[in-house]
Image (cartoon, rainbow over all chains, first blue to last red; front, side, top):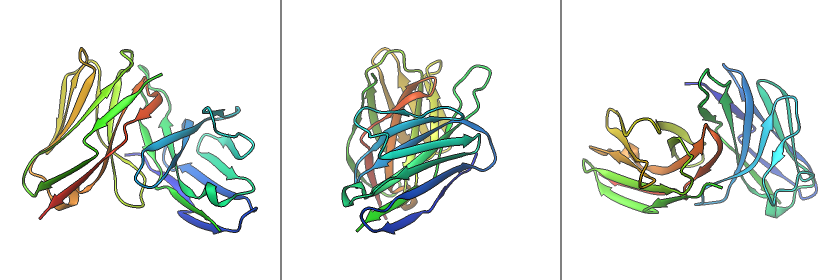
Length: 119
Length: 111
C-alpha cells in the first residue's frame, strides 16, 4: 500500500516554543491530508482537513492560530503547534488520501504518528 | 454529522478463538467503512474495508460484514494469534469525506 511518512516520530520541547510536524506521502499524490490528535487509550480526533493550495478547514473547537497547517505541495503537509504548553502534549497523526479515483473513495493512509511532550 | 459507536471496548480471547467487534453508525448516507489496526506507539493501519454496495468481504482470517438497513458493521477475526493483539478502530464516511472513528477496541489474544 501507499506510504505516509511522519516526522519527527517524537519530540520534547519547552513550554512556549513552537514545534513543526511534517507529513509526507512518499509514493503518491495527496490532494487532501488530515490531522488527528489522539489521547492515551482514546480514539482519533480529527483536528483539521488540509487541502493542497488552500486554507485548512478546522474542526469545531480547534484553534487555527494554535495549530497552523500548511499544505504547500501534493506530497507535504505540516502542522505547527505554536507556543506549545503541557496540555498540548499528545500523539498527533496525519493521514493522506489518494487523488480521487474515477468513482471517488480514495483510500486513507496514515502516518506513524508524532508524540509531542511539552515540559 | 456521523456518529460511530464501537463495542466492546476491550476483548480478550484465547489464541485460536475468533474475535468479533461491532460498530453502528448514524448517517444512512455513509458508504465507506474501513477497519484499522493500531499497535502501541504507531499510526493506524488499514486492514480491511467495505463499501456500501457489498454485504461481506473477506481477506484470509479477517472478514467484515455490513448491514445497511440496521446501520451496523462488524469485524471478524478467525484463528486469532498473539500478533493480532492491538487496538482496532472502525470508521464510517461518505465517499471518504469527514471520516469518523469508533472509540476503539483493545484486543488481547492470550497464547
